[in-house]
Image (cartoon, rainbow over all chains, first blue to last red):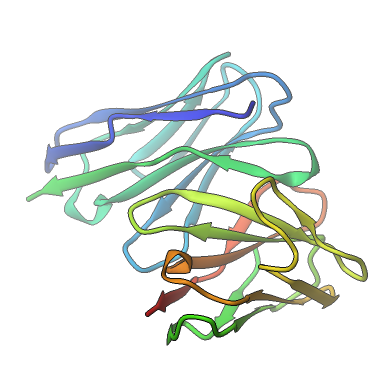
Length: 109
Length: 114
């Protein structure tokens, strides 16, 4: 069964306080690990795709990494505009995505 | 990436009625999908919209409740039939382009059923 588990459910940071979000997933049949950002009332915005253990991708203050069973989204020196829900999803055959429950990130000025 | 629009952006409907949601993409895409996001929840795949053939539904979703059309490579519709308050959700379409696995999402349709 496809499973994606994200932690923590919610994270409150002060501006500039770096941290990481975790995503663990079932490995069998994995075809990509995806990170999205979702703002209230909007559709998810694509951030990263990772395929291989050891792979890393960066975009501004965000860096996504992948191990054999987990992925991390590192946020360096966050700003209030980084506040959003961050979703992790595993890809399977036929292009399907199974999403985790998300981490609600709030960054206080 | 692709630019995706959905209509309507939101609607309030009465129990027992049906609503058709449209998804339009600005370029031809390989795959189109429909998701549901219930209040406070994450996204759940409803079905894959197949061009020129019947949609492929996920466990727990049936064609009679969620009929889907995809007449060409840039357009799809999802109908929510015989609605009940439990159908109140955000409905999202997504697309993947060319040979990539990445999905891009539309802005969503917020449906409230009274």
